[in-house]
Image 1: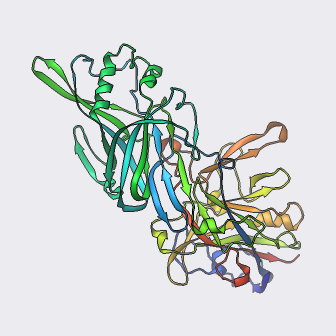
Image 2 (image 1 turned 180 degrees about the horizontal axis):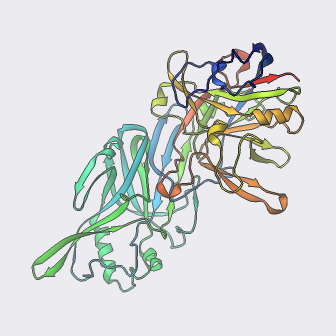
Image 3 (image 1 turned 180 degrees about the vertical axis):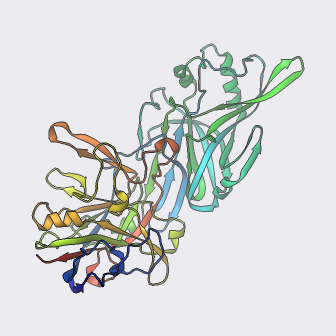
Length: 495
């Protein structure tokens, strides 16, 4: 524990709050904020730093039940070379279908002539290297009608949806997805367009006269076509985000039909993602041979020099603060868990998640819970104070003038209640979840509440951003006296 004495008066207090994402040299003396010291003259205030210990680990199928929801951005593609986290394979499964039944093509089922059928995806963003080509295969979902359902949620960590034959493929550069396209009745930008084989298109047209009534109801339609399965099969070092609910996600069926002898009219029908459409976004991580994998050795081994945090489905760090339980009673003005990004050239391709989250392991209940007193989840909604709690980073410069991110988690009330004996010191967990759930309320009527971290309540507009983002932070390396190590800084007055 390191301590220094500060003699401050109201007239000399000039600290100011860092503006979010402003660019400045790291200087803890000015990062704690103007509300740190009570506005009273001649207060003697002390500053102490508690060392922390960091232990890396990854979530598993058992500990991570996060599901893909229709409004979340869905990711597709392969990261083949992240120097810290290895490989990622993101696949997409979804249904596009008629909005109403009975469906018919221009009410001319006996005079239809296929031009083409194109799968169109509403492109949002790329995470990784957008200049390397990727080849995406489009398959048909296989199995039985019960294997892929709209009323079932699918975890990111499970890949249980069967697939059938190949319907088409495309090789492209992710950076080109920003370009505008000009096709029949569709002039817009930010699309991935994959032409599917004509045999599939002819099959869709033929369903209009099928004896089994493929277009008479949704259940009949799913008996005949169960959806699309997309996977990047070659090249690439990026994942691409798409909005299933966006206007540019659709199946375009271009065809002609007879309007008079020898006279054909050309048109297009669009099928979209509906409230009866199933979706899944399985994501596989492969950490083999990475620095992260080498650092995972449980919480009884030596502490890790770096904390490796990756978005859902990802990783976490257990953080121990050995000196916190024995901290004597005092008035805590501010307690911040400070962490700094350890810069690497690959950060430009693979930047951090938008938000990190800190919670605590309660040994009494054997469950994780949000930080008592400091993280606030509103009682009548799922809104929270993650911004003021510290989940959103500051931008700063390291000693080599590299732009980095720093996080300052506000643990002031939590630490205050520990030193007065009203709260126990717990192991902390740092992660970057899409969202997580917490048990609230009395034991007799526990309610699970959602805490949105890298997703939001506004999931209807594709606002959720799981999967994307990773960061390497300095760990709690007290032996090297690294000034950028993770640490708990406490500013206090004696009683």
